Length: 337
Image 1 (spheres, helix red, strand yellow):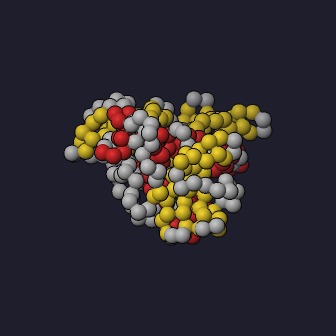
Image 2: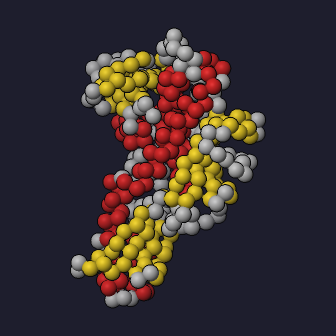
């Protein structure tokens, strides 16, 4: 794209990856078969094989993560703090009340480029006229609001904390699968090339010798309008399709866990952050045990099986576990989504 982004290009997340340390770049191909010698897996169950439904089952997991990342751009604690920075800016409010157009622009520019804030674009208007618009050109997830001075509305704003490229990087880092963005039916950016000209949800497409099932997410763009985020989930094959759909889902969640874990270096010093990131991005829980020692999240089930099911917080969870550095074992209580 070649455009300079204020800050969204560099940030990995508002709530999900704020504490992460950069690690090795993740491969863009998910391996849905559980890696030999690392993950403890139960033998295939007597349940019916997932078969042709394996692709949609795996895609539902990656789609859930992509939706959760997108939703976080609207309602996280950090987003609320950034909105408060705008609505509480004395410099901006007094400039609007004057009105002083040059001062409005300076205030907006200061807000967008303020260190440690994460606003990538801000547009301020009054009486239907845009007075200042500062930030990158390709922005996702806009948030609108009003600006008040001494109890009366003096203007409106549209802001965002994420750009298109930042969202693509987040989803690909969390899931390891290709993602492309389309606006008005035209390709904008992404990681799968050559990009298909048109994509429908749930379609099976073959590109460069690989077969994918698509999952489509409709997203809002700045300041209005929509784009389509298309996930290209590799179609499972072989032994995985002979497992139950529940086992396929657990394997897909295990892949998400491993991709997120690869963002921490060293992982052994960041188990607590991994647990928090997994909680934010999936709604599931991660516990790390080293023998009888609890290495992350002291609260949790007293005993967790290496695979199968466990009861926790009034419900039953399916377990994925992985031993990245013995004797430490990571237990992931996977969501149902």
